[in-house]
Amino acid sequence: MTKIAVFPGSFSPFTNGHKSIVDRALSIFDKIIIAIGINSEKNQYFSIEERIEWIKDIYKGNPKIEVKFYEGLTIDLCEKENASYILRGLRDSHDFKFEKNIAQTNKSLNRNIETIFLITPPEISHISSTIIRDIIKNGGDVSKFIPKEINL
Ligand code: ADP
Image (cartoon, protein in one colour):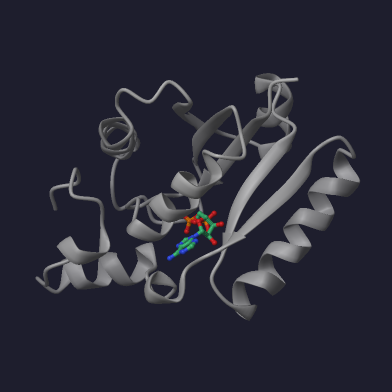
């Protein structure tokens, strides 16, 4: 059976933290769909189009990676894409508390979908898209926190 995972997130922007999760998950899954959720409550600092282009550029030539955007529930996207797994990263206990509730809720909504967590390496666990946006807003250099394909 083909193992398909959806990696949902805002990816605004996609960081070395996200890349670490995807790169390591490539040895576990046959296909990973990096899915940019359109969340009206979150500030869309970067457009959907540029976020999609950046991620496609990072993984160009890799047939196991697909990039999409979606609206609505992640479990509905999983069903549509025949994905049995949701992939998420864990940085710390704060992430754990938040992610545990989402994973348990998703499980109670659809028993066939498992959430798989990968723990981030310590040297990049401080990286968050929110902090990167703050550095950009204040004119700082973010190049060490994001993949080289992204020019900000
Ligand atoms: P969301 O808005 O859904 O939290 P994000 O784009 O912020 O989306 O994050 C998507 C996923 O990537 C989440 O599982 C998050 O915990 C994980 N993640 C974010 N930053 C890192 C990092 N530095 N190391 C590992 N995982 C990370």
